[in-house]
Image (cartoon, rainbow, N blue to C red; front, top):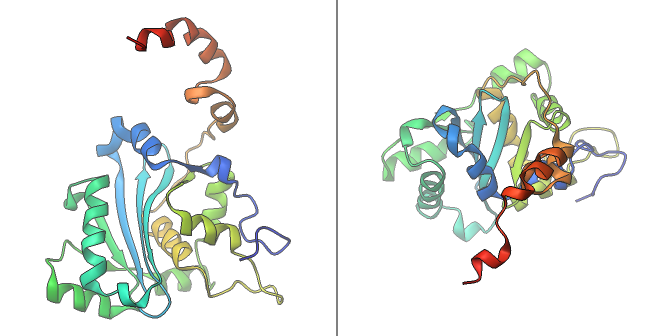
Length: 239
């Protein structure tokens, strides 16, 4: 992996800004969680990597969150019997209602749904429409631009627990001929599908991220000064 450099495809990505702990994200979304859309997107490669990423789309605020991942590269651990219980456990921990999830898989791996149906009840898995994406966009990797724009507009947050996703984003770079690579991109492919399938639209208001980063508890400096008198003294807890 090349960290940054002139060939970097996501040079705008800054981990300190675009990544936050999963619990912090879920706490922020708690009050509006039932207004969000949920996407469990699988890129079930059986040779290199079996990747599944769990997304929350905050439709009202125009924000996409990647909150968890499965990134199995061990060939002895990537069978349906081993992976699918992990998928169920993770999506239920995020939002326990299967009916609220969009389950999507890369149709190039048809064996995934065949094997899954043979062993588990289907919650509604459907194939991506990546052929249609390519036809409409006339490019091999459509919706990469959406991911870039989302980073620029602070509209895409990746949970810090998605270590493989962050690694792919940081290392994704054009080759010596200026072409977009077709490797080390399983996680990134799921992100493209998430933006495509969700009909993602940006909020007209770009959030003031700098004030959230520079101030504790996510308050702007002025807000934090105003709340200082409301905060309990640490001695109150030492009883």
